[in-house]
Length: 293
Length: 100
Image (cartoon, rainbow over all chains, first blue to last red; front, side, top):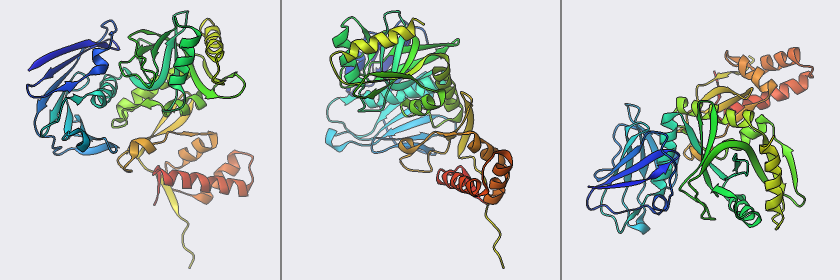
């Protein structure tokens, strides 16, 4: 058994114990700088074994990649379906201690190392859900000069990486958290944004964190404009970008409370802009004004 | 013989929650559709929808819902019936209400 320790993700140390004969590939976690430790560790054992799901009921499907199951004791399991072109058999991610300890069983032989990103994304959603502490959101996130994080949620393929490029071009010193996935937590009444190790097309994954200052939806238009967004509209738009623990009413409830905090406690705007050289500077000026309010 | 009008009531396949002052219906039974996680929608009800949702705690006909809307809001009977029918159809589509 090999013990692998990675830098903390959103304050949580991340450990893998990997049985002999299993090769895993963790480029995201290996490149990750890590945040200060502020929460309990996440530990995952990787072992060979049966990936059969016995006695559990399906609670969520993500075809063609995975199916989520709940066992009779309330333990969540995620079956990752075989991928023939990668020579991978089925793999079962199971809860050992909710929010803290998990196990991945690999059935059959594998050809080459098994990439872990799909399991890591499932894990972070399971862990944050179980701890009722936060969620992963599809967003470009960055830290404004006053030290407040700006969260720009958007579904896949709608401009997050482009926004990151515009911001970096306008102000190379701007601290980008991630161009695709940001972790948001709510602790002691405070909303906090954390970079995540899992970047988008822009390849940006920075281990920085900051209190959330602005929720900023993005749109394309010919002429730059900014408008306030109502909590109702913000809720509907945020829903489409947050990885929610829909397998559990209690966990979903906790996530909704964090969404509520996001749409009611901080300025919420939509910035619409053309993709031009000047757009990045304009966006930074807009959110700079909002974060200094 | 005239058939009795259909009556509808809430199911437990959505979880109603007040979020930011709005009544939202969260899909609870995501196994009911195969691509559940992709198709799961958050339904945010307006004031009228919230009123109708409250009424559907008990079995109601579309006519009863419409009568309540006419009484509560300044709407015509025709508009109230259309709104009630549309609301029931939308709720039936997501499994949030069922016919008795």
